[in-house]
Amino acid sequence: DWAKLAAARDGEVARLSAIYSRMLQGAGCTIFDARATLKDAHTVEVGGKTVTAERIVIAVGGRATRPDIPGAELGLISDDLFTLKALPKRVAVVGSGYIALEFACLLRGLGAEVEVIYRADLPLRGFDRDIRTSLVEAMQAQGIVMTADAKPVRVAELGDCKLITLSTDFTREVDAVFFCTGRVPHTQGLGLEAAGVATKPNGAIVVDDEHATSQKHIFAIGDVTDRLNLTPMATAVGHALADTLFGNNPRRASYENVPTAVFTSPPIGTVGLAEHVAAER
Image 1 (tube, rainbow, N blue to C red):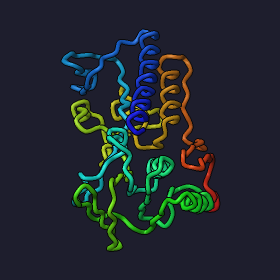
Image 2: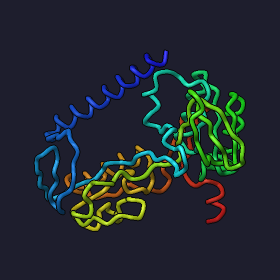
Image 3: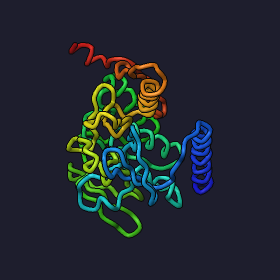
Image 4: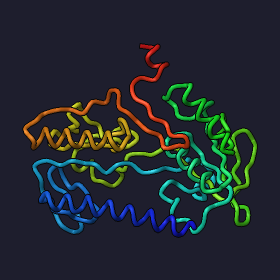
């Protein structure tokens, strides 16, 4: 029952959001539930009001992107999964990172026919090669089609279906195309130029080892810095920054040997150097 699943997911997200809101208010925070824009290096405009601050922390995260191909707007991104009215029967998942592989296993587990399309020879770039190979075998054993060395070049409508054309000149007729091909820092329209905050070409905010930006009283943490885009990493950096600024305990969160989990089926957990990186060192 797809509608029941979507409602349960929305309810859980709302429950978690409410917990964070209560914790913030309990800690004495003032919350503005509106879009914020930097007007200068000490001023934020939010919901028609102006707020000034001695220090500012930017933690707006990232957003999913679609590839630059004809018909890309016909495909879905990760945010769209639970807005669907029903489980699509045939799904093409484009990409081979955490989100692509987790969604592929989820959709297959719910009964969809799933094909994962990726441009490398193996998924999960940066992980140990034996883990990457084993995951392909495990996903194939579940009936997921794994198509390597290919990328989409076009998506078109075909009645109620979608026709996806690959760089290998093969086509696929599916009910949904999921683009899980990357995320970018969500800095567009944030007013960083007005505040004098430097960014990289992809929009990521440039920070030093203390997570200070080009304006030393403005800090940036999490995916908006495009350093190591993992939720626990953002949490650890935020905690260290709070301790440094307000807890009389100056410290940094280490980006070395960060444990990570991939919620595929079976799940993957890893920490430390991948074997090929260790060999290079």
